[in-house]
Image (tube, rainbow, N blue to C red; front, top):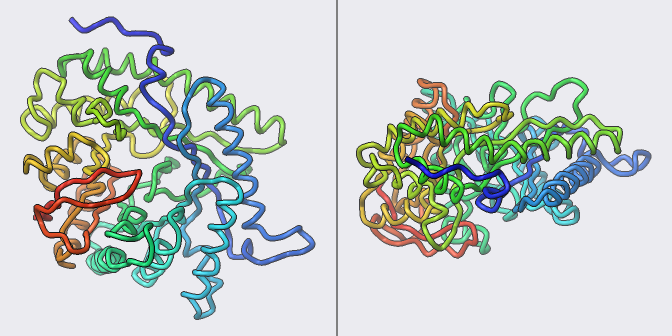
Length: 431
């Protein structure tokens, strides 16, 4: 028998809010200075978003939740940034990104995603975007079978890996802020609050901005899955206890947005939370999602027999929590450089990229923070991206692909990242 479930208060210390994310829509006119309006639309939008984020963060902290970051997301940059270039794309992009970076710092917003490149011609802009600041990221939207876009995205990943003009890009870290996302991502009014795949989708008429949250809940997963002991108990006990843990958080989010709208006369809308299981960088394995799954009787080693069944049961449960408003991936996040158990398995050659892609059939977010060799070919990367997006399209899943070609490293070497957001792991082969 599993242990008796605790109260929601008992569980609160086992997870935190990784991000409070505000989604805004920009137009090219927002970048034009207008003295009569007191500045420009970009400045006023970021100022308003900061007010919203600060308020939601404050309310959540008053309710006892730890909020790690606040983030801003825009609609695809091609809709508002590129119409201003008039042929001087690089100069205009650098100037605008520098301004956005200053405004983010001024208004205490940690990170910003500028949405996806949607065409081959837009992809070179991603290099300018990701190279300028540790705060700013973007992505590429890839449709199934779009070989040309996949090749251009692979070329972008290689180009980003070669940047070396600062600590935010050294050792391949520019690719931390870039991914390829399937067209299923951010669809059906369910945008992703996590980066770099996040983008603003069509705004509901009468709504100024929208807000969603993402979690860091590896320790909570470890506790709740460990209580279950068997896959058989995931649909009942795990689902019950996860709902119990998240319901007060949802109530706090709804209260925060409602109170803000009342006090500011605004029309902000709460979209929900991404209920994905997301690991922490806890120095022990308590924050590892892979280690949590290994607590089940049927799973000896993550990636081995029983893993797919466990992942399927967990994903089904977290996507159908009663009364919880959801948005985003709502799957299992298995980032090699952010999950200590996955890094261990990679170091011992017990897990491969193909294994991660296999798990994505039943859950998953895709292939995430996987270090690969510096000499990885364009063709290999292109094929991997097409595999991820083909799987996403065939099974209707929100999947993305984020890999790091590491300069000077070969398959089997260990990375030497100096990032507070990642752990080091062995370089994996693509095939």
